[in-house]
Image 1 (cartoon, rainbow, N blue to C red):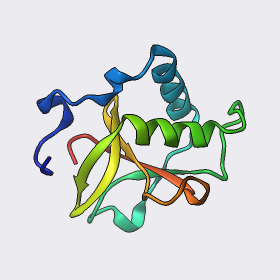
Image 2: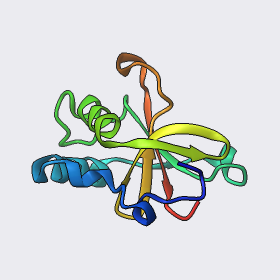
Image 3: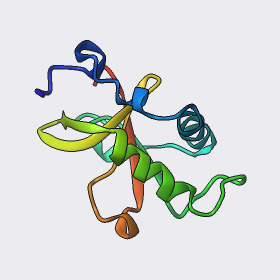
Image 4: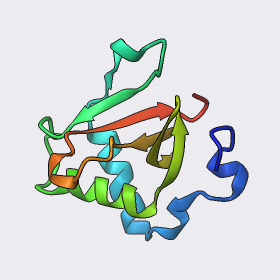
Length: 115
């Protein structure tokens, strides 16, 4: 897949392989999280991130890990500003991590689909 092709254009919206419960979980996780604008990358790779160490008030233990595992299982490799990341599209955003092993993953990134 090249960076110019979007999952929707190729029919690769991998969330269709998830159960409705998994999709609902991911949407709740996203809605409950605080997303921080990555101001250092505002002009070079505009995106937001959320940190493992800042769970939502109603978030269960293990929810961060579950989100990352689902992203990696149902995602696809996407080119973003010259680097390839395992990503998933949910709503109007792409979501990805930096690819570290699960225990070392400290954040989840998101960017608008048109970036």
